[in-house]
Length: 184
Image (cartoon, rainbow, N blue to C red; front, side, top):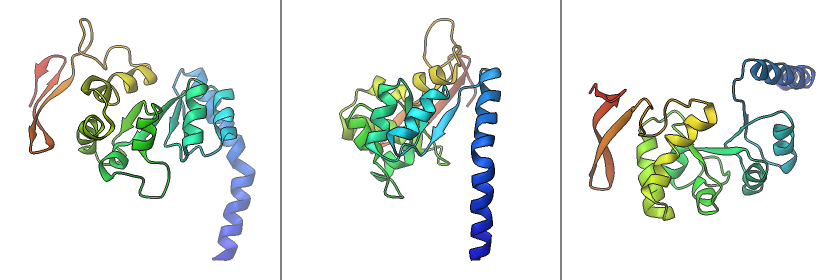
């Protein structure tokens, strides 16, 4: 087992930086927005900024999230982190970032139903307005990804949305609309 770990460590040392540079450059050529992942230190964020990265995905510390904000990099956290009330791995809480005005976008992080629940948790537990909380799952992800035809209910945009009702304290989808037409 130790030999395998050493071999993997050697492979990472040999290829990680080369592959990272190649991927970042290819994405730049194709105009594909790039995200960093699990930034911990200011140096990680500074590297991301130098590479043209636009999204800090799951910064592990408040310091990294603050550095991302200062460099104009949007911060995305997992909605399950909000629903659970904290990180499952001991990293910074999404609520802590929300309260410090360092949270821009929520992702489903493999639990799609967590998105809508997290929006209402931001309203109820972080004192955000509903439009601000809703923008973390609509306007901000669309803007950051360069999807200018969606993300808000405005004239000329796609008009994709879900109508919900509250059942106790949980949002329940009641209708889904795509391009303004009800599909479910």
